[in-house]
Length: 265
Image (tube, rainbow, N blue to C red; front, side):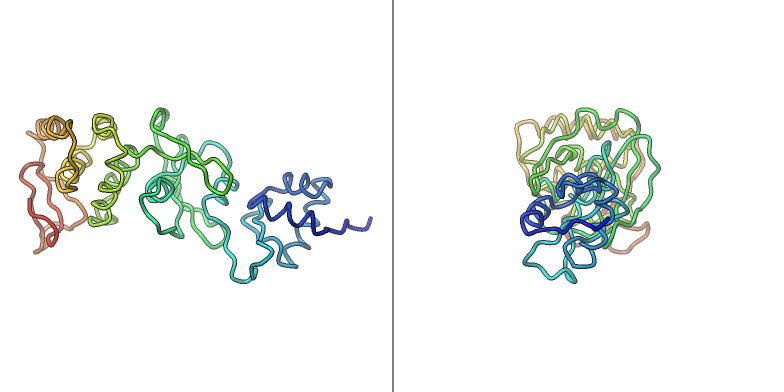
């Protein structure tokens, strides 16, 4: 059977779809899924589609050179991964409007999955495994490209960032994240999320960053006091630096070793 020719109106509908599966492509083109799979091959060859993964495609804007086109990584990741994933860490920071850079690594979290990295076209998805129920009541929704994305709340995002292993921490970037998201955060909820990790290092980092961020709130004094009291018998924790580094500083209030060159403890 001769393949259906794709007209301009169908190409316009395709462009508006942004990222779609073979089944969704079939609905746009008004053909069967098996026929849509064959048409997808032709549309990719002609530069109207680019492949995200098997069965998932991104439409190339009609006025864009397909050779230099990359789909929105958040829309592509959501469609490729399916339900059950929440954008987190640096990706949440971007989607919440606290960072302008769209990185080539997309961070998502989900319960009951294996932590790993997946390649989707030109970008990488870092999947973070979390315990069952860990994301309950700590997510929000944002709109992007006409699509609703599930994202960790400002409080959960900040705790996720400071909970990363010390060698991959960016101290200056974390300060900027706190400065950007604290005005939209509930400090008591932030404290509760930090405590839920059951990690004294995460709690110490939150306390330190709350103090050096310059953010003022009526609840700040009580929250900082609560963190200090929790760390009375804790040992020293490290934040974005290596032990015995000559530039290390020590925050006596929160028993935290952190990089020199920014603020004194």
